[in-house]
Image (cartoon, rainbow, N blue to C red; front, side, top):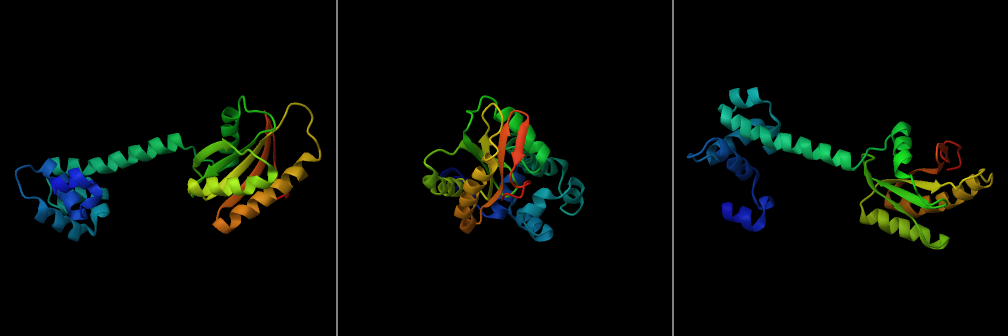
Length: 211
């Protein structure tokens, strides 16, 4: 089992074998395979064992304090990984978070630039990058990039130049956004909105019913 772990990684191990190796850290000098199988049968599966509260592991599993502590480590590691991921990928699931993100992310952005915020199915930011090229090439470029990142949704952002807003700009941008939305719709990717943002000023084409 150790050789498989070293040569092929943890994915090569069965659930009970992963649990067996963890238990060995808390119960040295004992064959932990029967106990690992018994715990999985008792709790239902590996995930249920690792997510069980300490008292349940002690009472139902008959484990000592050392083994209970070891089995709590994967859950804590997973929580910290999730927290690190959330920090690296901000969640943009409401107006306040989106606008707060723009306050910092668009500082120094090139006026007139079109940007795409690619999101996963929990509205976490996968990537924020410019969308450049000729207008007729943009739908293909956007669709290809979204597929590559496994995005399920996106927000388009046009960085407004300084000065008064061109009154024709929202409808012009709506035409472009509609074309881009059509390009990604067959891929089950949703266009949440197309925003026009300049400093503290912003316009949502979705709110203006232009999308």
